[in-house]
Amino acid sequence: MPISVTHTFVSPVTDAGDPNEVGPNEWNAAHTVTGAVAASAESYNRIVNPAMQHSQELGISGTATAGAYIVDQWQAFVSGISFAAAKSTAYTTQQIQITTTTGKALAAGDYMGFTQLIEGVRLWDFSYGSSLALASVLRFETYCNIAGTFGVSFRNAAGNRSFVLPFTVSTPNVWTTFTVSIPGDTTGTWPVDNTKGAEVAFVFAAGTTFTTSGTGWQAGNFIAPTGITNGAATTNNTFYIRNIGLYLDPQNTGVAPAWQMPDYTEELIKCQRYFANNLLSQFAGNVTSGVGYYGIGAFPVFTRTTPAVTGVHENSYSFPTSPGSYSIVGGTSVRELRTANQSGSGHFSSIMTANARM
Image (cartoon, rainbow, N blue to C red; front, side):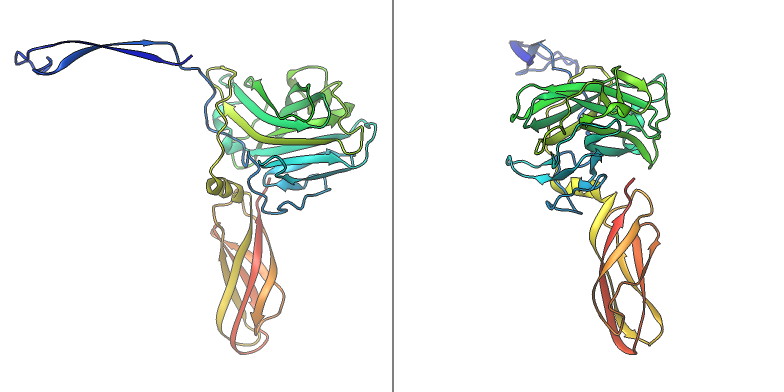
């Protein structure tokens, strides 16, 4: 309900010398406030890259590999199903899509969808695993070429606590927004450090191994409710997802805040905590044959943990035409060691990738 404010001005008051009174030519005003602000969950989104803005590794080339990152932090969550997944801009927005390339009846362990692993430090104030556990709200938008009932899940790192609910797409080929209220889990172990704290998954097909007839919090590793539609039944079934938000809801409103597009640059920094590419290592100077020299590069942000660094040779003179060995310095820089193969002036450089994903 919107706020209505009424101001009523009354006659001026003569100042009698008391500093707490209204002086000459000043006015008393009576204010009446009616209505109330519509309550909602907090606005801080715990999902990284929620609008699929960044795809450092694959761009829009896509993948058919289970577990691969379609875009930053969003994986193809697939087992036993032939698929193709990619970043898409088909609807003048950015989203990810997954398509069945061969339809099939599901085996018990099959599943297909999207998932994100959430670092524990992003969820510490949820207070999961304690009597102080707080509620949250998950909102997301989907577009499917088939109607059906599908599943959303929220699980801990150990895979022994699972929140599972169905969501139903009644009208195909239309973007639909869903909001799911998640009560706080008072049991289980929920890391709040730089390791995996939780995992959210959106599931469009699932066999019996990872489904449950119960809803809400379950003891076990489940990703979808029993009886969801087999979205992989037919070749070229396609599912899109975008604009995902996970918000703390301490007042139990069950209402997601208005969707807000993240700042492009700020969201890239969040993504680079886990994965960064196009990092430059370089050295130039006078060299002696048979002596090792370091090329220095820097990470754009503090990484989640010590990253695995790989590189591709860019250019060199007086050095081998292949990358050297890499070592991390102080958590913010990387050194590339190459040994000179002749004396005199020399240089080398390579383009590096740092992977600190969970």
